[in-house]
Length: 49
Image (spheres, rainbow, N blue to C red):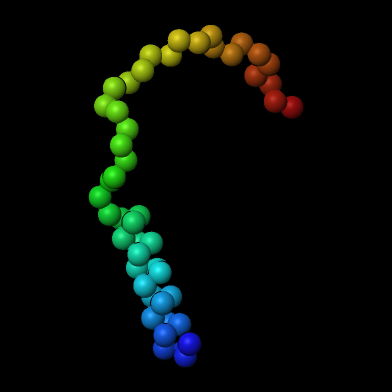
């Protein structure tokens, strides 16, 4: 592989990554809304010395 091919591949790699980061959201999370907290609050030592 010559230098221009390597540079071209590197540019394609960076552009594909930026397209994935800034592209539309493709997450398939269910639309369930906010879930209430059903646990017990932590009442331990708040002093972290």
